Amino acid sequence: MKNILALIEEKQQVYSQLPLFKFMRDQSIPPTKRLAFAPCAASFIMSFADLNKYVLRQEPTNDKIQAILNQHTYEDDFHWQWFLEDMQKLGFNCSLPFNDSLRFLWSEKTKNSRLLTYQLYKDITESEPIEKLVVLEAIEATADVFLSVTKQVTDELQLITNQEYKYFGEHHSDREKDHNAYSDDVNKFIENIYISEKTRQKSVDLIEKVFELFTQWTYELLAYAQSYQVSQALNQQLNREQLIEAV
Ligand SMILES: [Fe+2]
Ligand SMILES: [Fe+2]
Image 1 (cartoon, rainbow, N blue to C red):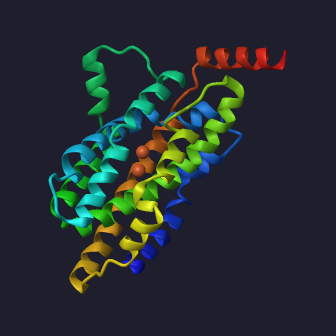
Image 2: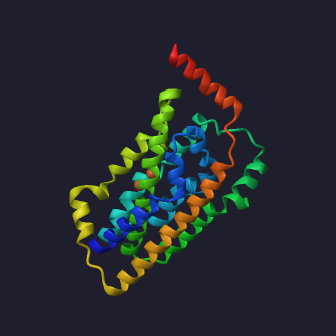
Image 3: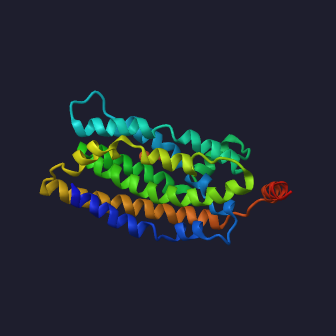
């Protein structure tokens, strides 16, 4: 398993250099614009709870790897609540008629967010526990990059608005580091899992696929954020808060 984890780390390095993350690190762009992909990401972020609860989780189990997966799903299946809080604080909780919301969520410009869920569903359901664990480790590696960069943006934003952003900020990245799978004993167990040649091949393919899906997703998020105009109202609100800070 050590080689599989090393491959995930290698892919993670490449992933961290994608244009979306460069865009988010660019301090010349207003912080709200750098996070303006959030509505476009909603479909996947909300669906990730379902992937945890109904796809990755298999109970009861006598399988040690499946038990690790199950524990992990309980640690990850409720983070969407923080996302909704951040949507409100970032000014993206605008009022839309229900049908318009549906049109947006099922539109062409948000399709990779949906395809990401569907493809992960397929890969997970067609996998043995060890392969599911590989998929989960790859997902976590992408999340680690994503959240470490969103945290930098919310750190800047927090200085202006004095608000805490639980999903995109420190709260979430700290919880992710606390996964039981990263505790010394579980981590050691995972590293030492024997991988047959057949499983190794399939794992390499799965890792390739997962990173490719998330890569496509980042291009969709970037296009959405770039086309977003920071609203005057929000700017005024931020400016007002900046003024209050300055007084
Ligand atoms: Fe999470
Ligand atoms: Fe996680």
